Figure: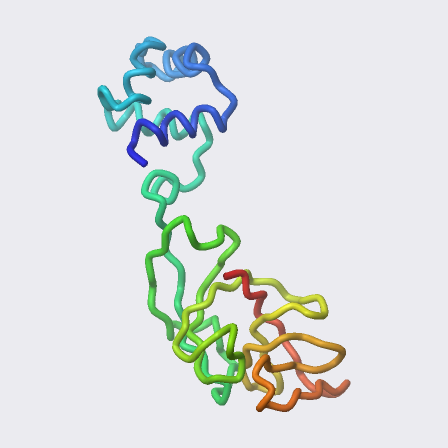
Length: 186
């Protein structure tokens, strides 16, 4: 999608007509006519950098890079089911990856799966996307830390369950230390 289409989308999302945007831009010191905004939105011409930033401000664009490039960055952690997780997700042991708008917007970070306990849905070395949250409902798949061990599992009735039937469910007892890092969203 080119700049003009995104400008149109941003304006419409803000609920503004071209006339209203023109009026608001004039209040910011830009003498821009509605037909000029139309030229920008159809790709005939482009706004100046200053006018573009003013439009983003007026239309309350939170993340200019993500909105206009369709890409954002996420932390990518390598997760190992046998690795301790005391500082998991808080240290600097991650890479930064650029993702596009096909990745769920609710993704806060990504992990690379290690092992085959969640096959066939998740395979070794696959990148999955996680929404950071402190709890999950039964039946949801997430990233857990149980007694200082990191797991990608499904939560079911007091157990962490693998999708691969070759692995036994892991019982979560009352005295166990269980933390939820987040839910798998993609």
